[in-house]
Image 1: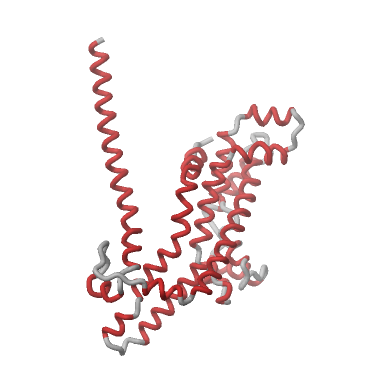
Image 2 (image 1 turned 90 degrees about the horizontal axis):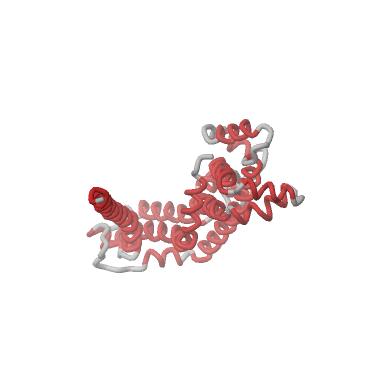
Length: 304
């Protein structure tokens, strides 16, 4: 009995040491993740002169909102670009989730003919693609999506093989077969089972995949670079990238001016402000979806 108690005490001490170590490591990692965001924001409200003289600092000696003033000078373009990006993100994410779920559900059915072949075919697309030049020629020469909002939605993001595989795994491992069989006995069709039974039960994985898809749409600027030339159709990422390019050109054209004049052009602080403005909506949205995101990734990753 005493040996058993001693064994329990040793295990309890080991568990406490591991818990302390785990909390220490996670706290350190959290600090490493949060500090760059704080430095980014503090740099965006630092005067250009202080940035040039002292470099980036968590405690700037001179505060200035000139960088955000530069962005507000283009307020009409910024709000229009935000509207375009929000529309593209919402519509693209909704279509992506709908197509992924509709494809993942039949692949989770054990009696689907050719189930292994289709699963392998989807997995194969994760390894190879057609290449940039053929893709560009196809979308511009055949589908004519250049200078349209479809240029932001369709190429590269409309269907995600990873989303399909994770949702399929969630369907296969988290939904009891008895529930599916009971619905069939009651006379429910496959569309009724999918819409009224399956979808409400897979909300965690849909939120997780929706967040990943939405991040992809929100942060994407390559589709706009390849397919959009009309500045009135620029999303927020492409507009902010254009503002950085214009600011760089302005700085280079002013290379003959004095050092003081160059320091008055808020180039470094504007870059920090632009980065902060671009990521701010995602930072505000993620805490509300974090619970579903963690649960969806954990359950969707279980091997079936």
